Amino acid sequence: MSKAAENWPPEDTEPATPHPDAPPSGTELGEHYSQCFGCGDDVESGLHIRSMIASDMTVVSKFTVGKDHQGAPGLAHGGLLACAFDEALGSTVGNLLRRPAVTARLETDFVRPVPVGSTLHIAAKLDGVSRRKTYVSAEGRLDAEDGPVAVRARGLFVTVGVEHFTKHGDADAISQFRDVRQAAGQDWDINP
Ligand SMILES: CCCCCCCCCC(=O)SCCNC(=O)CCNC(=O)[C@H](O)C(C)(C)COP(=O)(O)OP(=O)(O)OC[C@H]1O[C@@H](n2cnc3c(N)ncnc32)[C@H](O)[C@@H]1OP(=O)(O)O
Image 1 (cartoon, rainbow, N blue to C red):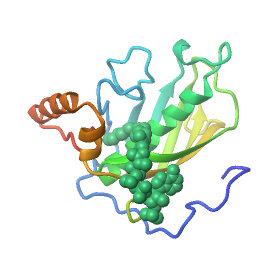
Image 2: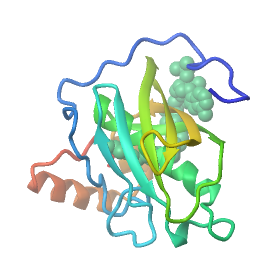
Image 3: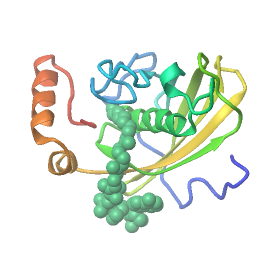
């Protein structure tokens, strides 16, 4: 996968089993939390990533690089690109497996510069599961699904209980988030 790559996944895994209630192919996912830097509509300079279920093992996401996302003049900051892949990979794990999980490890290979105004087409897939660990990887292509590869990433997500978020996060905000989502008949507990 990358020049520095070793085996991936780095241990024996079982194939991932999509949750029976995972959204079907073609489902547009929207934001998972309005204040999420990756996908939230309320974060003005956020990434505003939008994702769609592509199959029972893959999710495709789009991230358009804005002026607030620069490192060098006119070019995306690498850390923000890593953030975009964290979001895309996390969305893949959360929506297909439907259990709360957090990023434990994230690797990125920056293959070519990503200019402001360009759109990364990110295709992410579940690579395997070992106990609480889910391995997932993605490629981001410039300006088209079959454009040149600009970034590759792979991550390890570890399944956690909802108490991970209530204990370490803002319990009041989580409570409000839960109420709003439940009132709208939406799930709230796969990654609040
Ligand atoms: C619909 C949803 C959309 C969601 C999109 C959002 C995407 C954004 C996602 C994020 O950015 S989440 C925020 C960033 N991540 C964190 O804040 C996580 C902080 N870390 C932790 O809370 C804990 O370290 C963690 C929960 C990951 C693990 O702690 P635990 O005490 O629960 O488990 P443990 O340390 O025993 O690790 C479990 C397994 O994972 C392995 N592991 C943990 N960290 C690792 C690591 N860094 N590298 C390799 N392996 C790792 C560990 O060796 C072990 O393997 P084994 O089962 O084989 O023993």
